[in-house]
Length: 101
Image (cartoon, rainbow, N blue to C red):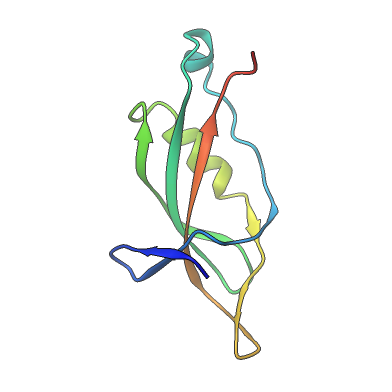
């Protein structure tokens, strides 16, 4: 497993999403043709659900944060298995906001 060390232990960037709900593009950003990204860190529960999601970085700042958090909280992941049992794990995901050209 690959990862990076930050605050609360190992942050996995190698997680397997089973359900991905795409974020809703904020109308203000779409009207102004603004694109960007949001990095969210969160915990994947034993059941594969998302909890404790927080934005740790975004560009441009704050414009897409709410949409990214709302979407990622609805995602479902393959639970991490250790010694035959599902365990919680910390993860990070970057959501990109690109306008279709």
